[in-house]
Image (tube, rainbow, N blue to C red; front, side):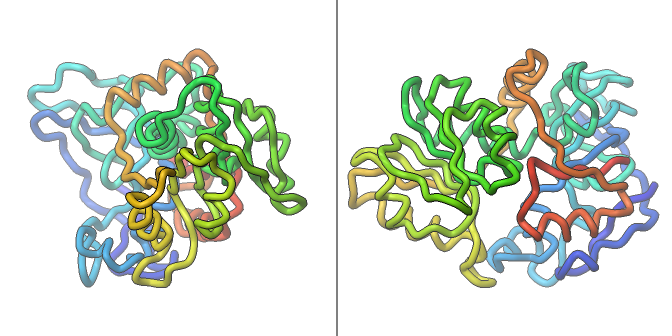
Length: 319
């Protein structure tokens, strides 16, 4: 089968397109015929091997996983012994290791039925980003109806889901984005939209979800209520050692000594959350936003585009 293969850490050029052996479904696993795979910042971090501490898990000198990719949507091709939820021919979405390939294998509990009203490309844009948004708001941020919620990076891969989910939870949502994304963010349910190229956001927020940029903690704290919560999901800067994580570490160190809660999170994609999102997607309450699609062979181009940092929603590989 054809797959994207990475033998070393580095820029997008290290992603090659070549033949590899097709995997087989083991006990409790399904073999998926991949139809689309999402491209998220995690792919970029693992391609570069940054920040350096990530290599303690992904491989010190070179990647342990030769085929990258996590977000996926496709059709069940084969089921292993003990699989009871899924059958050959089922259309599903979820996560698997090695999604940037024509076939991939994972446990059956990593997949949920794909909503019929979504294309494979749309479904592949959901799992990592939408689960991160959901867990940031519900689990870490403890969002409640009537709260004022600020979402920084509202037009990006996670932000588009955060805006919609915050509205589902009954919050008053303010989205921060660039000029070209203002109408999109408003259409997703934001009550207020701040174009950061023209103005700055004010204060009085019960919850801030910071997905983009590198605003100082002091600036974000000023925008919170005295007992508000800040959840930092992404960021820039920090060098190779702390790439994108330095603010999170400083926030966690400061949080025990102040009234405000400063948090970060490590997201996951449990079946229960995938099924909850599937229901919202099927009802049209939440909608995916796909920026660009690339062929599987164009994975390196997709990662280069991701590095520019200006995606609207998410990019997807079609297989």
